[in-house]
Length: 240
Length: 217
Ligand SMILES: Nc1ncnc2c1ncn2[C@@H]1O[C@H](COP(=O)(O)OP(=O)(O)O)[C@@H](O)[C@H]1O
Ligand SMILES: [Mg+2]
Image (cartoon, rainbow over all chains, first blue to last red; front, side):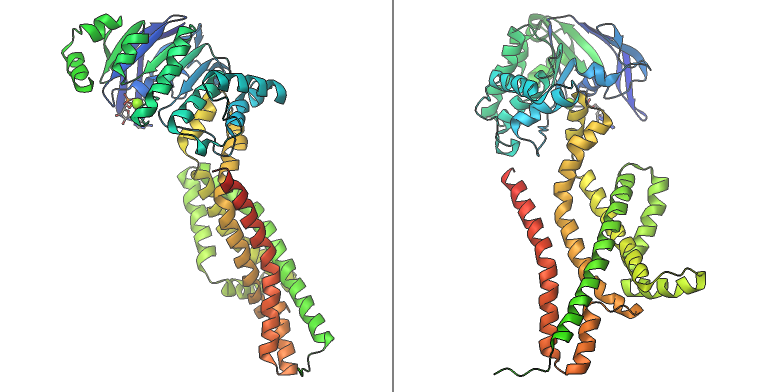
């Protein structure tokens, strides 16, 4: 369970998250939608401690992410995150990309890590690309590799930050399909996305962000189907 | 058919000169690279109040002509009272000069690694150290290597300047031979061939590594 309570986050003078509270239960898929610059990415990075916060707190399975004694490297094993920019490790082959963290962070033997990596890559449909280098993959394949890389740590949570935004339109489908599969397997996910139809289809709840706050949150039929707030309506009109 | 007064002794003399050039290159590049890696690392993480003065010192080392640095260091040594041989002075000055360039090469390589790539490594639970060792260094190395090869080749040619502090390296040895044989053309061609033979393996090594890495890109 991820519990976010009254989180405030600033970059210097600029407050970008202004008191956000929400919780995500085990097995739940929560989509986060909202205009660019509304603080969605920042919130995700606060959840796994990549960014510090100024006020409030975030608990992941009862562990206070921003408490002094928290071992973030350990916590992050349980929270996979995939970003908008493809960020493969260019000097490693696809399977080595996926094996790296299991070997170095979990201390697995080479053969064990290899088995896990191969299984995850097959799962996202990259079983044929194990020995290839990332530069030879399409954007959609790179993003699926990034998903496999995160899954190789056997995380309890997956966070997705607009993972299809940088892709050519014809490559979006394959990545969404992979995420759909994860949700059907019961993975707990927070999905920041502009793919409204996808959000509507896979989410248990949708949160609409507007200038650092959640303006509306609820089941997709409500937030996307019959939004109550003027900003939500304007936003949905702009992306549909 | 081909008359020359060049004798084996002359050739041997020049080979010894080439050995001196190589030795100075070796120590200068070794010292300069080790120091350059340390300073480049420091520069890529240090706050501005360390970076600014450090950068200024390195700027001076890079912009004052090497010849002046050799001569200055060689004269300063007697004033300060260190009893280093000209060979040691040559290695030390050239190592510092190499370090000044190497620092920027290393720093450039590290800063060329995208922040997003490093964030991805950290978000997988890798520590700062693991991110550095497993992700940043290998990528930075690929960026830095061509520049480092270029630097090394440049340093090898720059060793010819140490003749001004009385070291008989390859160029100086050839001048001495020319004075005796009065055959500058032949001797200089031989010198050129020597420099080529010394540079070629390094250039080849660089090309090989680059090719291997490019096949992955
Ligand atoms: N590292 C940073 N330093 C300063 N400002 C930042 C940084 N990251 C994001 N911001 C600012 O925070 C605001 C929210 O950004 P972000 O969380 O990326 O929004 P979103 O993901 O909703 O588009 C933006 O105004 C952005 O410019
Ligand atoms: Mg964003």
